[in-house]
Length: 175
Image (cartoon, rainbow, N blue to C red; front, side, top):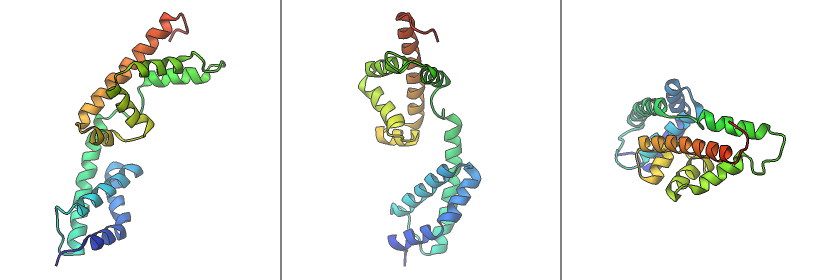
């Protein structure tokens, strides 16, 4: 007799610490290890695989967690984490300025974002406002992970050029 969904969930939750630790040994990131554990749980609960025993489930879960962790590491090697250094420099200078942010670089950045097509604004909103990972953005937009990375990279570059152009054109601070 195969394990029920309740049995699978109970068993995985009992082994959560060990499964997350196994993933952490590969990725060395607590949040990444937790994401991997959740992915393994979702796959186990998906109904595509049946388990005859708890031992079979846990064996499958450890192997799947290891594969997920290796895939996570591969994706992270291609991922640009956070904002581009140029954008961070713009934000840093704006925050350090003594004057309030009226007509500052943040206002200019907001203008540049508003000039973007809706699809680009949606991508930025999902990634930075809603806080989704690049993988989550790719899932929500039904596109590939590499496409999300490339679009974000182009958007960062485009926004930097837009802000610098508007600031230089207005005779404001030079970057």
